[in-house]
Length: 161
Image (cartoon, rainbow, N blue to C red; front, side, top):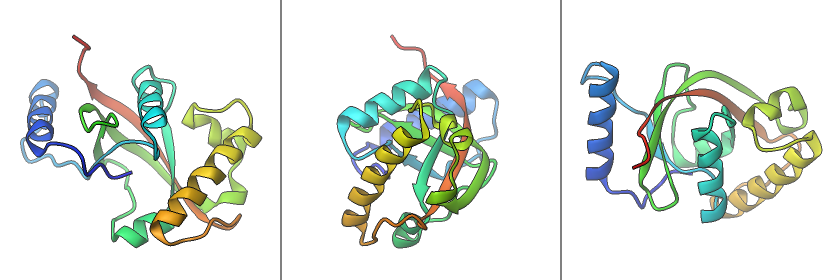
């Protein structure tokens, strides 16, 4: 979810440190700043899974991108992930994007998210998420819902002090 609660100053300072410490050009841009999920508990837990290297992908509704007028992620995009409070924690780079109906997501795909031990568990959690998000954004979950499955690598995170 797009994070509206962050401080642009904190984000800018974090991004400058990322560019400096990774030797990237100051012209390098990020696409979005976001946190996972719709609750503090899950936003922070999924961030933790990313930071320990267990979560390497995320699934979003294509309709959410359309409703918000945002572009679908592309390979090479950089994004900043924050915790629930909007504190930037890492930069990810998109490595692959697959769009397919919810019903066609297999466990081989779903397990890259690092959240579930079975396809059934993944489906339960994501049906709940897409149903709740749909209520907020004005779409309805169906088994044909187009899902944007984004694989990524963490390319920067600061050490915890």
